[in-house]
Amino acid sequence: MTDTALAGEQSPAAGPVVVGHFEPGSEEWHAARRNGIGGSEIAAVVGISPHESRFSLWHRKQGLIAPVQESEEMYWGKVHEPGICARFAELHPEHPLNVAPTYAAAARRWQIANPDRIWGPDLLEAKTARGAEGWGEPGTDEIPVHYRAQCMQYLDVLQRRRCWVAVLIAGSEFREYLVEYDPAEAQILRDAGADFMASLAAGARPDIDGHTSTYQAIRELPDGLDDIDIEITAELRDEYFAALDTAKAAETERRRLAAQVLDEIGTGHRAVVGRQLVATRTVHDGRTHSLQPARNRSAA
Image (cartoon, rainbow, N blue to C red; front, side, top):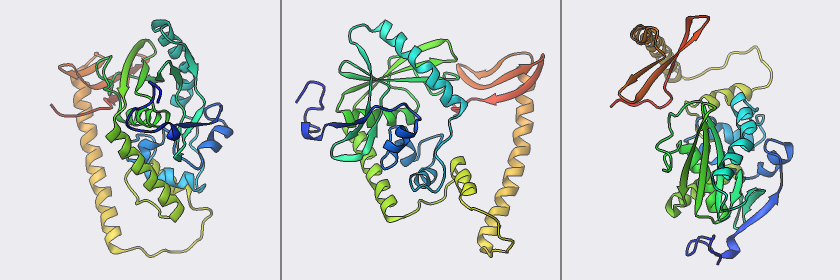
């Protein structure tokens, strides 16, 4: 057992297997993950991803909807990755920083790991963020929960103890965080991943939830249009109509309160309560363009 392995947790025989060296987002990269679960996908499996739901991921894995298209956020994250890693290497010259291949756990070939870099005995993930919401004090493990799940899966597959997360916030603030391996947490992700893979094999579709990507997946599934009527239950009709009424009332109230917040901000930039960001006012051509609420919201 090497000093980088998780002594007492896994045996060397259960170590990682190199699947290949692929450009992230390439067809080869997607193909390597098609029959498994990547680190960026495990959060969707356990229902904590802001970008993907269990339902939409299941349908992608079944080939029923298209792979995720690269967003502007994903594009710029990829563009900034080398610079973020270079800054980390400059600040931490103790070990070489190496580009990592794609790995799979030997005992669980569905469990895929594609860390950004390997730094000596540790891993490194490079992230970008528009703002500091969701990121705690530098040096802690207080990072967005879906990134934590990603780090935990990578540590589990590679049998490493620590994953550094270097983030560039708002294009100019560099921070570092440290996630340490937690056997109990890793086991939860393993069990959830195995259950998800079993549901794929059994053709057991996940329940529909309220995630945006679930709705988008359902919109993408039908092919063509038949000019026919489809009978649905009265219960579903009533719940749907009630939700529309509730949403309309909530939108009216949201506009009223947004106007009140903007009125309080005046010519300011941000609304805060103490150190908590509430909303940000954006301006185009000298006039208010929008009011963007903070991503992480909770009452004191």
